[in-house]
Image 1 (cartoon, rainbow, N blue to C red):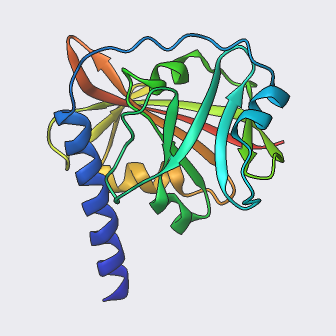
Image 2 (tube, rainbow, N blue to C red; image 1 turned 180 degrees about the horizontal axis):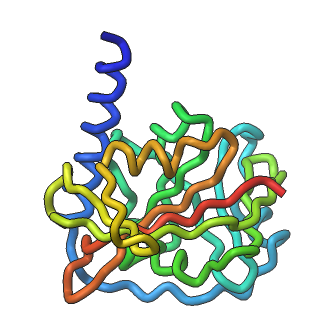
Length: 198
């Protein structure tokens, strides 16, 4: 009974995220590459809480604040910010979510080997390296229970639950998630950037 309850809860959260991504406005916000250094970024967002994740940085690509979800399905609409996906903690991973027309636009600039720095409130940072990039097409983009096609293996069909389990299921990993836009549909697919500690 406990396993069923957990799976139902996780699927409900994923459903809410899919719906939220589908109903938010489609206005585009330009997010330019950053010229700030990691040290400058750390100083700008420093707090007193050493345990709190407050920023994500990639040299000359992005310097984004990390905000906590106000609810299980919330993805920030703030410029230059990403939401920390609370449910990723259940897997022991760190998930960062952003809309593809806001900060998520930076995610497609990352490639295997790219170094990502997570910045904590005390100014410390932890380094990750991108290992895997996965793209999936949603067969029913506006259906939260859609099955997905792995764009690298078009014959492979995966359920939304299995997709989330596979992407976030590696303990210690960092996962950046956004939607893929195609043919005017902002929710056409999903992009996952997976990184592991350096």
